[in-house]
Length: 219
Ligand SMILES: N[C@@H](CCC(=O)N[C@@H](CS)C(=O)NCC(=O)O)C(=O)O
Image: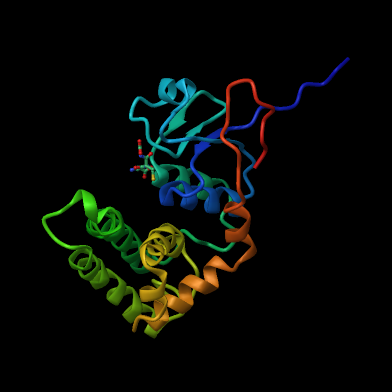
């Protein structure tokens, strides 16, 4: 009798999407295997759109048929399965609240300024530097935090670092020369340190875009 491989949750992802990056970081950390489907945003697969009409990545289709189409929901789900280093900051309600507030700021105001800085030609009301300076206010806050402890919320790596890092990386990459020579030394060191970890290197490996019928890529 031939045995069929157990089916895995399916993650629709885009390698350079910061929302997808933070979910891949967490799924890998939580030791949850998924079938990875790399999506081309200009050519979204019908299977993805059938699961979530929003048409954003990441989307995680669980084996029980449920679908998570918000990165923070995927992160919470993964951490509820396994969180060996307590990224959730369980038992530390003050830090936990702070982490959530920081992620909200990141996903809201900072992401907004980041988009305008990155795609300044689409927002001609102001030059790119205007949006960069607006985004820098968040970077300054992070820098201040990192002058007090090695991670964003406290002495340990947490969900806040993982959720925010991919966006700071994107901010840095708009003009690397400016960023890595800027005054934000604590943020620069934190970014470089985290990006050099085996976990980060692993989740950034190149993937070829998925097509229906492809052999599954286990991640
Ligand atoms: N709130 C969503 C946002 C996801 C999102 O906006 N992803 C972008 C890529 S980074 C996307 O899929 N955009 C759709 C598009 O570009 O067509 C989440 O946290 O998962």
